[in-house]
Image 1 (cartoon, one colour):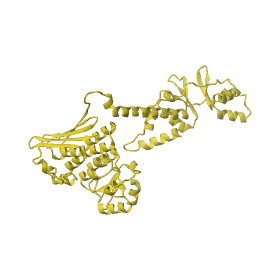
Image 2: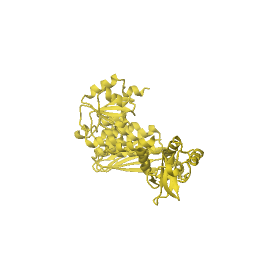
Image 3: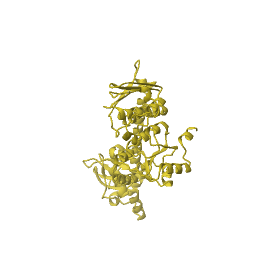
Image 4: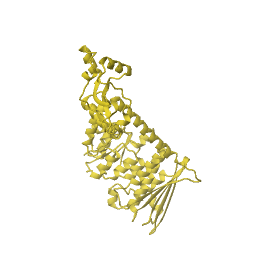
Length: 119
Length: 317
């Protein structure tokens, strides 16, 4: 499933890198700790987090993630948006909690990291 | 088709705050008309009959030609003019009587966007190309533009290929007893805005050098964590030094304080000395050193309180 399809089904609002919405999502990962994301998230994963500051872009870019869903309507700063556009990292926002979004992603068939790894 | 689409894309792009220019758009501004035009121009004179013109068009398989009188460009005549004359039974009329006198031309030294715009606006099949003295030096069709663009794209593509090839063969081309490429990155303390940039740059360099994706990913994680540690924990920042060798990459992160009192404790998963405000940003989970260890083949951490810390990471290629 592509990032664009997920954005539509979950009514996420696309904040950056519109041109990358056709990226195929390989799985999902949720955490607010950057080191955990660095350790566990896999290339092409969608990352669900409460964090909204600039460094989420660096993490997503280094790990080549498909995109970031920022939950609970956390406000995004201008430099975060600018960096995400420069790096081509889609950031999608939602007023819902991480739990709600993850459960909706699971219903769409987006699987967690461990399951993706077993392949 | 291409030539009419390009200008519309261009105008759409200009209105955006950060226009992203495609390679094709760049080329229509970069390439000069003289680089893509046909230089051997078949011409007729105003005194020639349409019967003669018909033969010229047929034998050369073209659909129009400029009209020259005493070396001067005086008009243009196309197969369309010829058909109209034939309908009226005027096959013996002269070119001068039936040609279009009000002609659009382009200059040889103009970028091809000028021609692209004129083709889109007037719908002509060809444009005579003149130099700044007004002399006819070539002829340009939309086909010439497409061919020129494709040729240039191919050249650019080859150049990029050669670039990549050279970068990935650097270790074979340079002969020494031990060849290494050293990349140094300065990392500022408490600079969360630029945190991760050194790791990104190192990652890109490795990709450029043709390192395997699995190696690139390990280096990215290890160098990001090492860089983050310099940002979070040092008093005056530090340096990230990567030495790339044919068979391995050695990353050294050095700083000048404050130093780690208990290295063994620092290595425990979840142990962190990061203050609350940094943890709120998602850093300081106490997983950094563990991540580095998991990604590296060799890891050495030495530290002296008041002197500084040196972290050495080796990842085999």
